Length: 214
Image: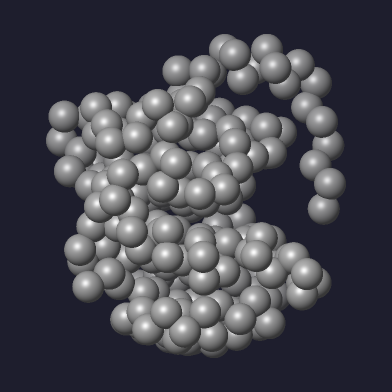
């Protein structure tokens, strides 16, 4: 759905620029220097939308540092405003799209990656744009520490099946997997995105998988 342009967007983003990372590639290998003294783990949510999920994670985990990535500035402003209101010190945003995660992070720099309700890019000719395409999965796994994880949620069954095939082709370690997250015992159902809250209230299945780096 097309987002309505927010009046005075540029000025509002400028006023909250202390919550933004202007050049994520310049932080490669040194993201921890942005964190609070207690931060011991670094996480990223690619496609964080309005920040509901990210804010919950940051608020519940003061020892972690959370980076929210969202290329739509009209959307990310809402997340930044939430962060300002909550006063959390262990989260930041990047108003951009990430093509290759290794342009921003060194190998082994991340503890966890969240991909929530990514664009399914349904046409076959666009499959390389999917955030769970094998090429991107390989980059994610390189950016993770040993024992690090990637969690993926979607309401799109075709995208989920595609993702599982890509995971299988790369022989990645699946820790958790379900085609109905909110009817499972997995703790991933406890932290919801805006989309997830809406879809689950409609009784729509949420597909979920968690993979771990050996």
